[in-house]
Length: 161
Image 1 (cartoon, rainbow, N blue to C red):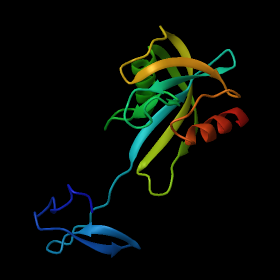
Image 2: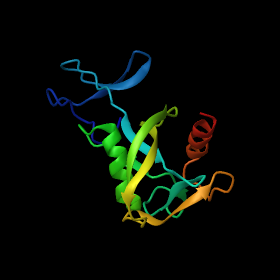
Image 3: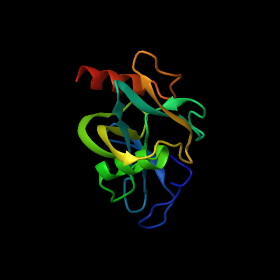
Image 4: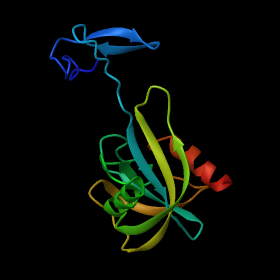
């Protein structure tokens, strides 16, 4: 049980952990409410240019100094494709139009699922945003040190697409 999940949001009783549908979940012993957790949704974009793909060198704690595809979290109520375009703009200075969905990627035990789009450049100026140390385009056969091994899987699926 997470630190913030000590009390029932319905009746404020202290939560207990019980097996519900084969998984340990926080349950209220007074009102019976079961806490089901929603996944976090993230987006990344594959932005091709001249046979290369756009990447950012991360300036955030997770994967600091390593490279990854531009993207980030979808805000509650935000259209997923608009979040993808927003994240690319914030991190790279490029305006894009998300196109085909490459896939939805998830891993056991990780609450984040990632929607991956291929995106077409429509404008802007390439420049590292506040969450990037550098930005650049890389050949698929010469990728830099990646923050997330998943990015190789994502790129392979897009390339084989």
